[in-house]
Length: 148
Image 1 (cartoon, rainbow, N blue to C red):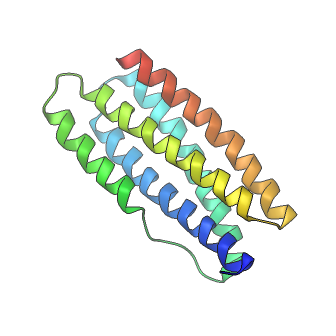
Image 2 (spheres, helix red, strand yellow):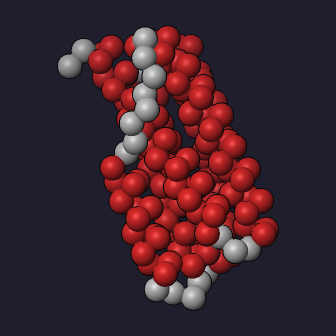
Image 3 (cartoon, rainbow, N blue to C red):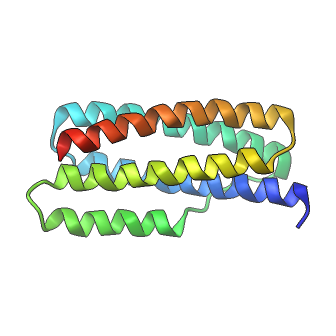
């Protein structure tokens, strides 16, 4: 596989994970009961939408099309959390726990995209997004511990 295809594919996969995570956060927002958690969820959701939109712009520039697909495993995790949260009294924790797992996947996909890319402007943007997503991950990790 060529370098060009590799870096486009890694960005495509990252956008798919972000698309699914945005959908998962929107779904969780409708189910979370704690108002303080909702504030953080809304802030995280906004950060994800910004990151996805920036990546979409780069992807369109490189590939001439938007990536609208989602990530199957994140979608499965969302449905798993939905089922599990119906079986427990601490449904907020279940949702936060699964959302934090998605954050791990996003960081891994970002690392892959950074490692596979050789275009300096794209790497810089990916690194900026990585820092923002690392902050999001830390917020979700804190919430995970707080809701346990």
